[in-house]
Image (cartoon, rainbow, N blue to C red; front, side, top):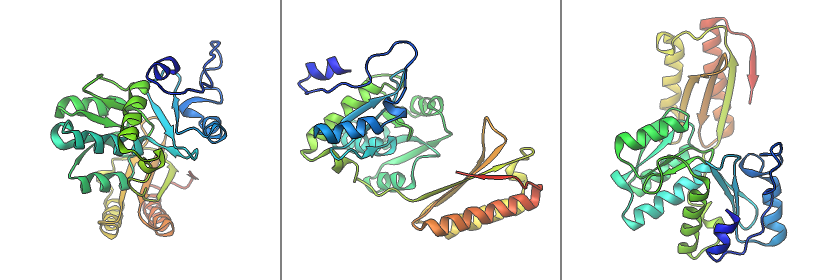
Length: 265
């Protein structure tokens, strides 16, 4: 990445680029961005680009060292593709964990969101099925299908840097395309995973919460695919209201299943 960016005319200050086989992602890259953010401020750089260990995803920080997550990058990429007339299908594939603020922004652009389960495989499948040009996750794994069939961190960096240069504004402007909706994520340890569609009281509480937040946010409840955990995600303009809704859903679920052990995140 440093060589490519230098050849394209950028002044590059490379950090975390001396792997020894044991230090991959160690205090650097897309999984640990604080060093990058600090260095951008120190160098007074226009932006910072972080790749993960296998370089299939990327995150960017602006000139102030503030992080632009995958949702922010998808917003910038979608707006650019739409403006250039290359956003195929007028749709973007995102996962259920993408922020409600992003979904609202896409709607304002006239762009539909194809929502998939969490995982780059599901995003890729949706892109292929729908014939789309763009999709991704808030982790920074983004697929630009016109150039590659899977996520590529360097490609993502180049596309977002191009959007930034074309805008004529600071990188921070791309991070302000939409206002992220506050999120509350509550996790409950479960003894088993009874189908949620069979739990009438829990479903009724989820439905009532969804109606309460209609047009302002959303509620998403699912079991973890790898842990004995029920995840309750509530997005809405007020953190206090979000927590109250998440707690109410958790309480009803516990009453129906007898679950008592709880953890928060």
